Length: 73
Image: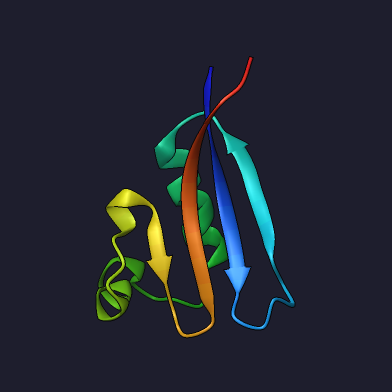
C-alpha cells in the first residue's frame, strides 16, 4: 500500500519533523498548506526558490518540505 509522508527540515534544524502518513498525495498537499498557513499562496510563493508544489517540493528561506511516497505492508 502506498502512503505519503511530509518531511520537514528547517535551516537551523530546530523544528524538523514529519506529517502523515496520508493515503493520497492530495491529502499530503493539503497538510502542507495547513502547516504553511503563513504562506498566502504557496503555489506562487515557492516559484522564487525553484520549488514545485505539484511535485511536493517546497523550498523557502527557512524550510525544505518534501512529500515522499512510501510503500508499506
